[in-house]
Amino acid sequence: MKNFFYTLFSLFIFISSFSSFSSESQERPKRILILQSYEPSFKWTSDIQNGIVDNFKQNNVPVRISVEFLDTKRVSTPEYYQSFSQYFKIKYDHYTFDGVIIVDDNALTFFKNYSKPLSLTAPYVAVGINDLNVDLSSVNNKGIIIYEKDDVNKNINAIVKLNPNIKNLYFLSDRSTTSELIRKRVITSLSNFSKLNVIEIRDKTLREAAQQLSTISKDDAVLLSHYNTEISRGVYHSYPEVAETISQASRAPVFVLGEYFILSDVVGGIVLRPHNIGLKAAETLLTINSNIERSQSEEVEVNLPVYNYSALKKHSIPTSLLPDNSVILNKPISFIEEHLEILLISSAIIIILVVIIFIQSMTIRHKRRINNQHKKIVTLQKKTLSIQKNMINVLGEAIETRSGETGQHVKRVAKLSALMAKLFGLSHRECEMIEIISPMHDVGKIAIPESILDKPGKLTADEWKIMQTHTTAGYKLLKSSNSDLTNIAAIIAYEHHERWDGKGYPNQKSAEEIHLFARITSIVDVFDALLSLRCYKEPWPIEDAVALFKRERGHQFDPQLIDIMLDNLKDFIQIRDCYPDKQPETKQLKEEGAPIKKI
Image (cartoon, rainbow, N blue to C red):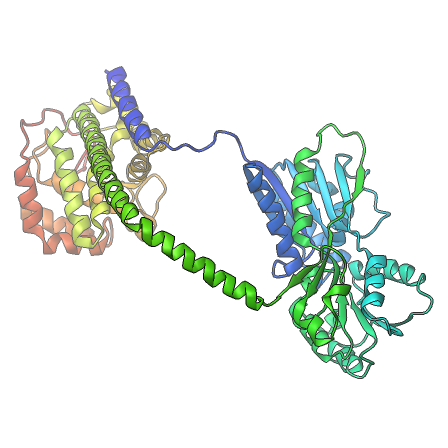
């Protein structure tokens, strides 16, 4: 007998799974951790992040990315790193990564000094690194460090070439980790330009630095590195704010080492392109051999001459002096280019007009084919849904018959559930769904031994505990499917014996913690059982049933749903009359004092 029910249910699951089949890849996505030194609103940070993601997309690599932002522009104390390490361990204690991408020096500091308890043993790639002396062999020997290569010599040569009368170079940098490392390279490079007087601006506020630059000679130049000197006082300036304040105040052209600073009146320079850094990071991680025996490092050329057209024009710098292959941002469209575009558009319009009749006719034919195909798909979906609905009804009837109730009961439960859902204001699809799945509320009885289901007397305490497990059994049975229908049916099977006041089972949920579909099914199930003939009772008079629901309003049942049922009682009774029981029940009452059903 049990084999028959299991076979029947397996057939239903197969049909449901077929209808919800998707073509998702079976390959497990690679779990990638990205450790970012700074917060996500940094253009530098977001551009690198976009480069990483773009590379994975271009290579069709399925990944599941976890990103952690240390935000060390604001705070980078050992205490902060330690607390972040503890947070990290709690979050990823049982999570294994396939690869780690480390961005900038502060994230590398965290990885080196604070990640050991985190068991980050996956291959790693560190990018944007300025500290040439870093060694990670004690932490993880399966990685590559890609150093950030600011081409300072080329930048200074370009500055001198673009400003032939230059005497002073004003160098702005703060005391952050990255800026300190860049400053060392800049100072070393400037030693090769003996005729160039270097004036450093390091500890002034942004406003004070701008004020100083507003008085310098227009023949001089400014080299801007990172500049946030007021963080200790709780003042933090974004890249756009720094770029705008410095470039608009300075009488001399402002040059930079990173593309993220080419804003407002900043001239530009031979800059790092963070998007390229992100692309290189992902590309390198994908090619790392997991059997690498020792740490490796690389210097990768990710620099490109990029200049701002409006700033060049402001400082009268001719584009002919720019390095080869320069990218010029914000360059206006020339007169010829502008009119050439109009001519091309006009030509395109003429061509379109020639073929438009043909395209329209093809479009109409194509739409007709799509409409016909859509009708076939809708018909197939309706047939599939109908099959699912019929299978659910058959299973529901089989389960109810096994426990001594009639097949008409599950049909009435389905129709009554749909009615209450409609009166409650649910959508047509939701009403259709609850009508289909509510008959499965007692499917878990398939796991209850027949010795308990067929016992002709009151159940013992142990037997009653076993009987209560039908909710959990039904949930597990239905939850194993990939079908949305059966997943919702699983919830109804699990929660239809919970009570509004929290005294139900299996989890003592209360009020709206109980799924709405389960609350509806619970009420209509009891309503139909009270008014039906059973082996252990006569049908209740409608007045007695109404009295019970009024008593249990807000206790066993959802008060709002009870009000809906009582206000529309004639409609509920009319549905019952459409599906009368075919024959009386013969089983005896199983538990003393149970006025409704066996459980």
